[in-house]
Image 1 (spheres, rainbow over the protein chains, first blue to last red):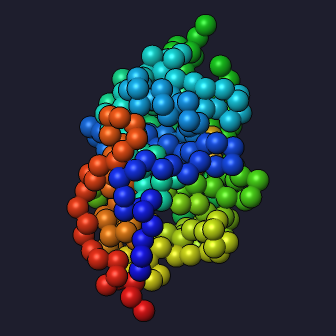
Image 2: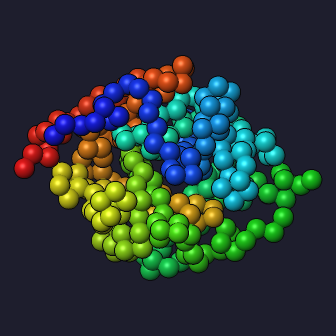
Image 3: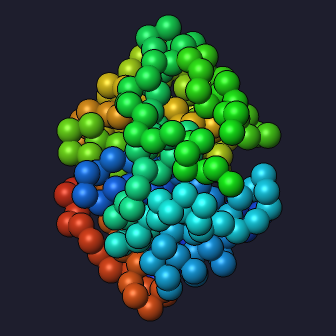
Length: 135
Length: 135
């Protein structure tokens, strides 16, 4: 089985979607916890690699944003990895505060119950969004 | 700041893309390692929740697949989580073999170098794909 150069080589050769985006998973490098997933465009990726603060592209607001710009909860990028076919990025970060705007350490604070229809909370809230995001 | 029910409630209310897909991150529940990201359609999700083996939808082959169906490297789903706005799934799995078809434990075996253009290998190969996938 011949594997493509993209999977075995050392050239960064990312596959972006037709909209010019790529998903980026954020993992806490100290705890291993998966914190969030968001989308990046080329500008967000370049800024992230240069500035070491995770930056993304909001598809709903159609704009670029730096994680923590409102809350101060910056994700400091220690290492950025790519997956085998280079269509997903994994940012291994040092967290300066919780990742989720709802008030949890990680965005993945709810688990799907055995019935496949309901959710149970699997984490405790660590801050009050009304305090952190108040104008 | 009023948060939507989707973010604070206990009803599973997933947001699929226009193509009916949702990204699913696979994490090793024992080591915390992020192993891969793939896409699911509703059928793949239902089968995964029911059967406890991670199943996905291949956008390139336009078909459903069960992780490990060729290699035997099944991902046994211990817990499935959703993110705050319910457009990403996190599968916390017990691994029965490496996740990546290239021969690594995780698909994220390369890190982006400081130049932002080249990759360095950050993991060791644990199997030879030619042995595992031979017909």
